[in-house]
Length: 227
Image 1 (cartoon, rainbow, N blue to C red):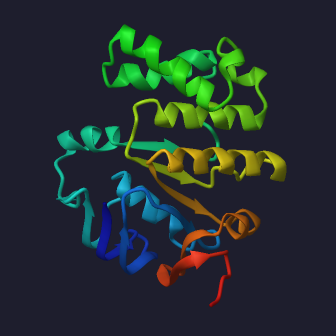
Image 2: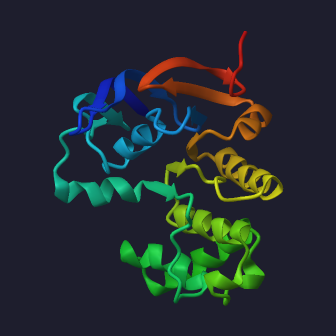
């Protein structure tokens, strides 16, 4: 489904964020990209969303080379993906239901589709009873659940998350990871950039470790897993 072919990313100031990455991620996989702050893991995620462009190499998604994709096509690429941020990025003046529905309105879903789909994802993330609440009336974990619901409401094939548990306490973080695992088990490819060692060790999923832009390990296990 996703392939990085000899991908490198050098920023204008000369920082080499990613160096000659070669990675293949199959449909339905759950993958952690791990590393310290500044290691290049967020850049790996952002290049999939076309928020950053590789300096060299190609990125293939579903058989299509997105590297030289026209700007007019990027919104259609992003419709196949959901994105979860560390800081939630909810609309403060809209309630939970409207925050999720907004993602459907962007792709011009019909009112009928919205009325059908939003309650489904609210139920999945366990927030049906808080549909009319504003973001500032929710806990951090609940806000992240809303962000996840918004990310999956359009049934994306790929769910990307950049430090989705970074602002959460350990118990809530584990709950969020359990939810992401459930979404993955429903068939969605999940890719998470994180440095949360405890979570990665507990989940025992595929781990792609990057340091100073170089991928030095790619295998199933924990954060510092060794065979």
